[in-house]
Length: 182
Image (cartoon, rainbow, N blue to C red; front, side):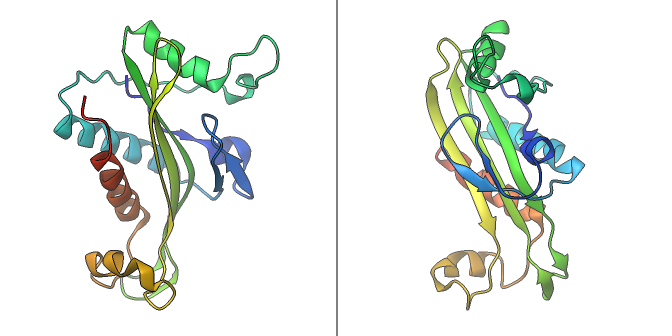
């Protein structure tokens, strides 16, 4: 089962840090345009369809995150995700969360603010909610002089400033290179 991404900045705010509801990672929050959720969700399904032999079930859902607190009587996010998988008899659920999706301000060759994205994806076993796999992208484009260790990305991007969609798409492709094949 592949669930669409959830915009956690919309739920928890665009400032500060947001803790992933399925792990102990924190991400800097930021604005997320409305089209980012659909674009990233569709890109994920498209890339998975190209590389996976598994039957993919897509599902249009939106959990009420206010009910996922761990207090007595409330389901955790992990339990909700696993329950969604069991409800459609899926072996596993792939779910994602967007924390920041800021578009570049400027042109490809001169930007006053670079693109910046942060999102995570989790593969959860439906039977018990256990983690099978996890990956994330948390990147703000930097100039080569600011980060000499990222020379590979600088050359791959041909020395230009990329859009948030380009950055997110590249990051998603790299994440799925590490995705379990079976």
